[in-house]
Picture 1: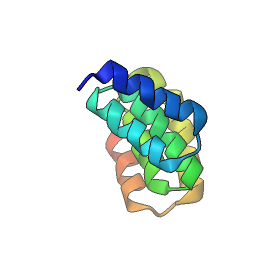
Picture 2 (picture 1 turned 135 degrees about the vertical axis):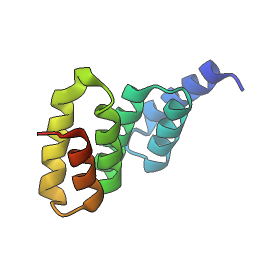
Picture 3 (picture 1 turned 90 degrees about the vertical axis):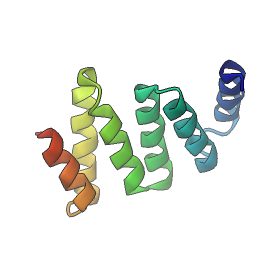
Picture 4 (picture 1 turned 30 degrees about the vertical axis):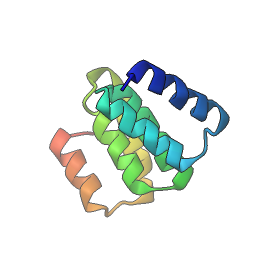
Length: 101
């Protein structure tokens, strides 16, 4: 109920277990609830990185694309994804939708 207290405990978990996928998923859900696009993008990227999950990277890219000031970060993730999964339909759709070059 108290989001500030919940965030405190979440950050404590992340401090002690930064590589734990379950905690990263909690962070993604928590910051999505708070509508903090930048933090959702960052934790989605970390989730993709830690688990080598393409969907985590794609989710991260989709959130970074909503932030015009993070265009360079979006391009970096896009290039990484194109190397990892050049034929992923979700990725190709996302790139086409935002006309990301």
